[in-house]
Amino acid sequence: MIQAGLYTALINAPSIQALMPKDSSGASLGKDCVHFVRAPKQPKLPCVVVHMINVPPADASLDGVVTNLIDGEFQFDSYADEASNGALAARQLNRAVRELLQDFDGTFTDGTVIRFYDVSSDFDDNYEEGGTGFLFRSVLRLKAFYTEGPNSF
Amino acid sequence: MPTTAVQGIGGKLLVSASSPVSYSPVAQLKNITFGGLTVDFDEITNLDSGLFKEWMKTLVDAKEISFEGVLKPLDASQQSLLTNIQTAGAAALEYWRVQLVEGSTLDFTGYVSDYTPKIEHNKAVTFGGKIKITGGITATWV
Image (cartoon, rainbow over all chains, first blue to last red; front, side, top):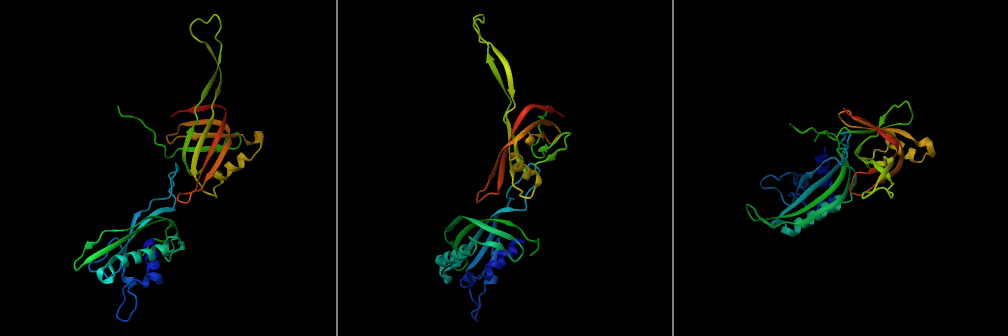
């Protein structure tokens, strides 16, 4: 399942680990800072929330055959609050995700064979008022061709 | 009365290299388009024709059919298109059939006259092709 592969790729990247919050011993809390669809309440920040925007087959034919090759688009929302340097921290995390994945051509740990081929969007969103301060989001959308690994997480 | 319609999906372009025919489908086509049959006329207007021009029907040209598909590199039916276009002369003449999903067929003979793979960075690789029809088209409607 591609979510498993994306999760592992993101939490294991040193460039992203370096931007994630640390525990009292200085170890990265990156594994608690990558989420799908939505972040939990009171999330550790900065964090990344991944959305599958559209993942249709790359093509279809009169045979009714839909190829296993997916032409997918993913959105990576990088969030940060004022305590973690706000908009600049969100932008920094966005850039780390972009530099990690935009030219990625290989196999994720879940078995998904993937090649990213386009940055379809990259922008900073307006801040939002959170429970205890302001929340900033930097948005990145990437497109990729992939053949997904086994349907397990 | 409800409108009758036939869906495109399930339609096929089939080919047989020899007669008696044994058709095999060309895999993963996205569309098949006939170029249309046209008629040639010879003008026979003369001094006795009066006000209107007169024409004699001479020849009918079945033209070409074109198609596009999703490339499947190891598929023999797709590979045969390139083989056929590089075969010289009458040996390249093949028997073709366009079959609609409900069973109607259009049969003709022809040569592969065009083969055009298309590679774009943000699309699945596709190919296009044409068949030059020689002779007429036999239709069987069901």
